[in-house]
Length: 371
Length: 133
Image (tube, each protein chain N blue to C red):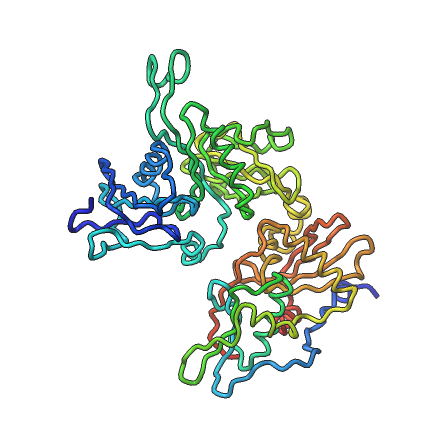
């Protein structure tokens, strides 16, 4: 029950929900309210309701649940050390309802409607591990009871998907099922962050090609060197195995292995603390050509790729320089505001690759600005 | 003679050959193009033809103009929407880049390949230039 002076945070309210009612479950830190649902609608099982109630009190800022959930979970923000409440109680003392749509929240934060990166983890909701010792539980002589929640969270901590399973199966198995369910709904997804417990999430071993760029342990930079370098693209840097730093660990993104519209997923087997699942997709350029182009023009193909995909980019077919493939010249703005001229080729297989990229000349800049 | 300069591609400047006239409002100071996040992504223009051409370019690249807007500011400083969304698509279609049939086929294959890139589309550069061109 909400006490005076406390302001609840509305976790979820799907369209068509009935007004909130007074059924309450009191937890140690949060309070969960279950509204009355429309007649004829059956409530989920106690285990599922408890799972979602527990979700509301996780440190994750869970403000949304799946729209298909027929009940609302409303929790106050009186958790120790939590942020101030975002909603105020209505005059009746019950929380006000609001409909919060994830893509609207993302839009307010100037992000695309669909997330490109999510994090996955699992949490035991009820029950736990029992056995000779806690750490050995689940192994010899141990047993696991209760329920487990796997959750996908995007960068704004908005839950993307939740799945409740028995606690016994491994996290990877539940996570794999969750991904199998939700990947078709996440067409823009390019990376999944997971801890090393999710090794094997892809369900197959890395190929010899990709294992060359497996996540490697952190090494100190050589004396006199510039220090840590940073990978320029989540999809992999073709120039060298340059590290990305995550939480004090170094992870080298595995280079894309093959192209395809629907990327497969792969995860490092040697991640120290965090693993990156990158889509298995080769960047559309020759790595040697990318290196020479950078040496010659000071433009990386990663930057050119962004400029190429700029909505205001202008393109000209260039049939004079190739007979067996479509050449195009594109002028687009890079993230740094540089106007780049990029030459691309589209083969008969429909795949495009970047051939060169350089800064646009004055005449080309005028041609771009001319409209 | 082949030289580095002579071999450079000759980029044709764009031209609105369709003869369509851009909307005009007498009390307007500037026109511009906004993306679906309501960011101004073009410079300020004295006429609406340039923003419409840019909208036509975006329409060719993205295939749709959901959420995109051509806006204007009047002499009192108030912002008005000239066209947005489907209305802008209809208004900007005559201002799309003019292509020959062969060029259109190449551009179509290019756009199909580009849209398969998971990085497509990248976010537009937010324009901060306040001068009216």
